Image (tube, rainbow, N blue to C red):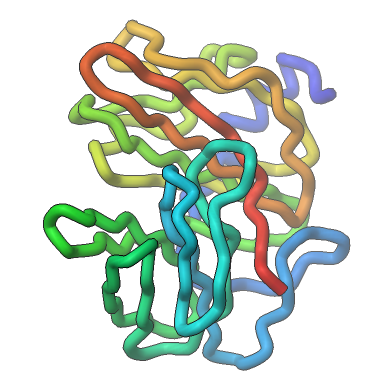
Length: 214
């Protein structure tokens, strides 16, 4: 595990704002090589474990309770999505990572860009604020540092961190800790997503390594 002084230097020097574009493939990571040069990847937030289909590919959220399905490769243009008995359509651009947040009552689906840099020697960190708190910080206790500040409700943000390293996280509203994630290892060539959910004072945070349907 990286020591706290080195982590302080890491956050001072190597916290890089993530971009949605795809960079070079990783050596031993989880990122797959796309089958087409303009391919993108899309996942769906389905916390009730409903069956999800993305352009005919069936998937569902994993057992780690983050509520996110694995990423599925898609092409640019219209993409048909179903969650249970509800259907949606989004329009994708090339070379992006997306997450879809369906709203069954409204019959709409929010399409969010995920900050996935896929840079050599780094791990991507993405934070989702799916709570009723207007703005939440993702805080790293080991280094007394806010990694991702003021992430808006129903929004996300991301950074790329030099890896490997092990960190814990807290979702904070100002100085108030809403929920915590125990230490988790961030490996080179992988991505980690932290999801804060809940409302009316009841919150939880879950961390899950990004995965792909291959």
